[in-house]
Length: 265
Image (cartoon, rainbow, N blue to C red):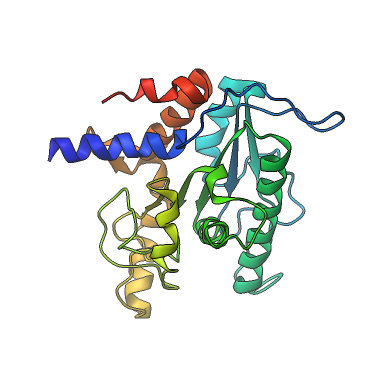
């Protein structure tokens, strides 16, 4: 059990550190283009936490608790970009169109960084509807239907996603599935352990077994859907945000070649 837990924490760090990143992060952008950081972290907020008019440089919503400390520590070495999209259920647009606009924006922005900055490590994190957006993009990249190659996605984490698949790689053993049903798990094989779901026990968005309204209501009132910052991850029951922060810290501090030495055997 202890060995399996240790392996899981290692995988958390590896998914953020990325696989196959062998070049030193020293390349700059083309003349006149924005500078290339060591790491770019795209954060996708949940429903009601942002809008299409939002400033990508301003942290919002639940994920701000993860990204603000990182941005304060690393300055220009880490670029945190929040994805502006409707993030709505019905207004200003219905959920399917809101999610689609978010995925299109994330795919476009991440592909731009990948093209301009070949040595920048790209990571994605999404919460709730934002987790659905990240799921959409990693699946599109796996099918190579967007300009973002899957090999440029060093790591992706989806928190409380309505598309969560219990058969996919999950950092917490939680029964149930996403309320909207999962996308094809086999499409994630290309990432070789760099894409993970996280679902808090009792979260009705990602851990539902039934569409019964009473079950959903009780799950929502429990607060499980907002429990992610402090959600314990074994071994050690470290808070999820602490584990993810440490992974990004290691990546920025050590660079792409030596980062794996930090996690060790």
